[in-house]
Image (cartoon, rainbow, N blue to C red; front, side):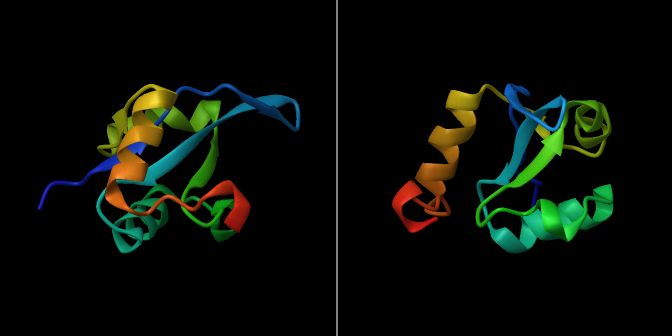
Length: 89
């Protein structure tokens, strides 16, 4: 099966840098496996996504993550049924 991991445009400021989100539109297992291959720390996982700093995006796309807009990432995450609603955070 093809990897369906997505990364959006870094636009979320925190800790002096911009951050993006890394998600899977297939399963959390796939997302965790991809994050492990990419060397992302477990602490960067937030219920349905990993927070990733802007400078990591080239390496993530080189590993196969698809670069999409924030809107597309959110749309596909919701459609997958994996999205955790704000009220449940």
